[in-house]
Image 1 (cartoon, rainbow, N blue to C red):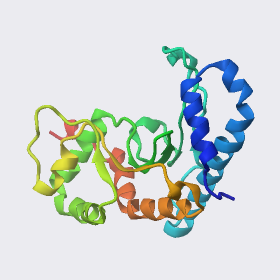
Image 2: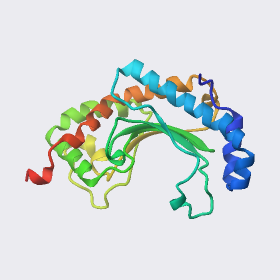
Image 3: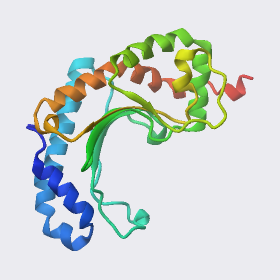
Image 4: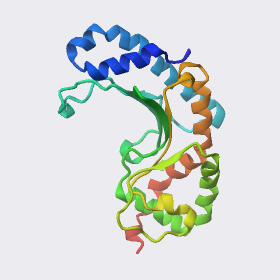
Length: 227
């Protein structure tokens, strides 16, 4: 049962950032498991159950919590451990980088959660824009409550050369190479209480219509073959 993270969790992350080596980590591995890994796994499970209860089954696979160990092929700075962890909620996919996912992430300074792509393929975004061109009002109806809620910010690299958009309301979405909706907060009291589960579940539930919309994008026909 998730009861909240603690100041000990934050202290561990900061200490790991400044002592990112095997000797220190092995000496503090029990702290990692007790203060960081266990509550992160408990949070992931309860958020998974909460979303399924609130929104109905969507075919999510059990949540994936990131490993503390970096991929050895990518350790170029001599620091083999991550000072942050995250988990994702997603449907089964052959290409997870181009499929929409919910996530939660905790670092020494802040926590965040939201919905989006890790790195959408160019074809996925082309299909997205094509659908917006054809059914602009449908997307605006999904996106408007999210924007009005004011909790999530649209994030993602934009094209240097702006594309013509189907409507002003779609511009923030249309001109991105990939995108995510992000809620980001400084570490504080909310992080240390069980109600964090409800905060994440309620926020993700408000994005579920968009998740359903994005989950069908890759099944659309290739616009390049329709020209």
